Image (cartoon, rainbow, N blue to C red; front, side, top):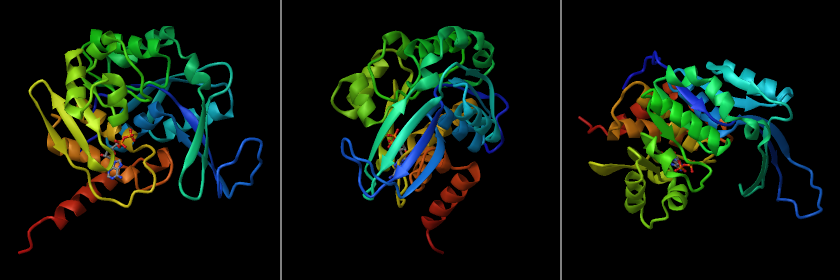
Amino acid sequence: MSTEKTARPVCVTGSLNLDLVCVLDRLPATGETLTARSYTTAFGGKGANQAVAVARLGGTARMIGAVGADDAGRSLRANLEENGVDAAAVLEATGPSGVAMIHVDAAGDNTIVVYQGANALLTPAWVRRSAAAIESSACLVLQLEIPLECVLEAARIAAGAGVPVLLNPAPARELPDELLSLCSIVSPNETELGILAGASGLEAGARALLARGVGAVVVTLGSRGCLYVDGKGSFEVPSFQVDAVDATAAGDSFNGALATMMAADEKITPDALAFCNAAGALAATTLGAQPSIPYLRDVQAFLDDRRSRHQPRP
Ligand code: ADP
């Protein structure tokens, strides 16, 4: 597996959010005011998370997206840059940035209210103005937290330039055949696969997506790992046992790792997917979105440790 920074970047077109997280003893009832035990802010949004994951996992990343004309917007952009992500194609839209207001209770249950803010103001025209950033990339990564017409426009530009597209179809929704037919890889979790494919069973669902023009499907299965399916066959790759605390950004870390492989022209082998599983498993051991996205050195040390435990003793 390549550990060098890939020369050609991954372009992520997607969302940026500021997460406002309150930890409380219990979740408030309607009309109730409670005092939180703690309050933190964290950078999030699936687009920004996956761009940061690429940069932390040894790739080169650039982002197309939108932030608001506010303090949150300025810190969302600065955070990308601090993580080594090229933010030149991040638009400053009028109005507030995207925010997620998250309440977590003592048992770890939560409620989340997302205000899309600037993410909803991204336009196909802005994506077209940033076409060169897509066309000169090794791969394009998409999710579904920006308007669907922007997702489709980015995919059309990539496919027109022969740039492979990875679509992480989250949050789940039905999608037009045209978008699916432009994707080299689609990476739903089990729930998303059910909504997208409407078929019962993982393989049947994945095959339904292949029939609609997707090149390959990687279904993420939480603590169980992932399932790879393409026209030639399928295989499962189990994940690693960890003390999971919070699965936020596990999928984003997994997808960042997958995009880094695609950009480095790595074949999607069981070994390559074990690297993606390791990135996701490590993210599940830490609270929050971007704070939990691992670095390449952490994933490599984790894999070395797990493999050495399975070496036969002399
Ligand atoms: P999402 O976060 O998008 O719902 P998943 O929950 O399927 O996606 O997690 C993405 C990947 O992260 C999984 O395929 C797996 O590799 C890893 N992962 C997530 N949770 C765990 C866990 N508890 N233990 C080990 N690996 C995990």
